[in-house]
Length: 501
Picture (cartoon, rainbow, N blue to C red):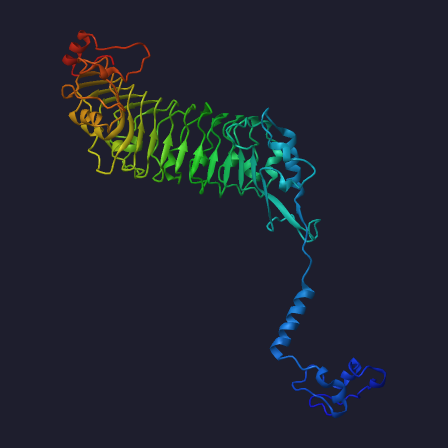
């Protein structure tokens, strides 16, 4: 027979031994190879091959078939996944060091019957970047998992949380990015090497427990740390300076409030950090207030022992520096400096902050008159509290833009501005506390009703109350007081606003 592209091959004919309906496959040997581009059916095999002769595959389909077969041959079986032994050991240590308080069932799923990556609060992920997993290691034939997120406790309102201590091996969870311990009664120190071992941390929250000791210095300088919340514990010692400086380039939220023992001073380079939210309230911080970061939106140092004037932070006076003050934080919405020992006049630039909503300066030693520039049409203060200071002069008319105004327990004199009175009567200002001053009048039309939503207190001033409702909103501590003794008011008039507030 003729094969155009191949050598003639003998035809093996077993038709005598085969059924005429099913020619034996051996007879196909007379056909050309599959690589032939044309069918080849010889006269001697036509009756045997007939329609059974194999036709060649199109070249493209043939190549695709070879590629598919190659992929099947080279495809390796899926590798099993296993948790890194260091991480598994750290989870075992955590289980041994912590336990549920009565009413909490967080650790119910932490048993040997399941994979540690299936424990409540544990999230694992492959980690190809671990340098310990070399081809010669025990993990060369498996996918190594590392703990990437660890949440201890449920955070539910009806859950009492956990108790116990934090083991040092917590610092070996090298791939951890988020570590959250919900409020409970966990005590003891924070492992000192936590920051050295957890270099990938982005979120660290251990708030609302009973942790003691210092804030670990190793937490300063972490390249990816965004939020650090250690509030509501019993920590003491100085704030690591690197947390308040550009040393921690990604840090935006720093909360160390309600520890009681955090001490030291805020460093002078604080303004160069990129922090958004700083809460250091109710601690033992001392020193003055340095310039604030231009990025700041929330700042509280309430309930500390800080002192000095605000001129260095906000301008408005001679701070002894020849250089101009840094840019003020235009987006600052919440400023709480209350319950410190700050003194001097309150700079007008504080009231001029364009984004300010809450200004809390009560219980300091501020003196002098208030200088409040007219607010912009878009500016509305939710609350302004300058109570319990030594502020003198008159109530600025611009404060009529406040939703709640606390000027009580100062040395203010003169009449309450008509704009402030109209704001109260119109319901725009819902709280006006002006008691314990030397104010001489509240301009209100006769029989003008006070809105039910308004809380007004004008007691213990140098005026007759315009109505009984002018004392309805007063705190009841110490009993009601209607007016100051006349002799105090006479001495105030002669001294131009002095006296004991």
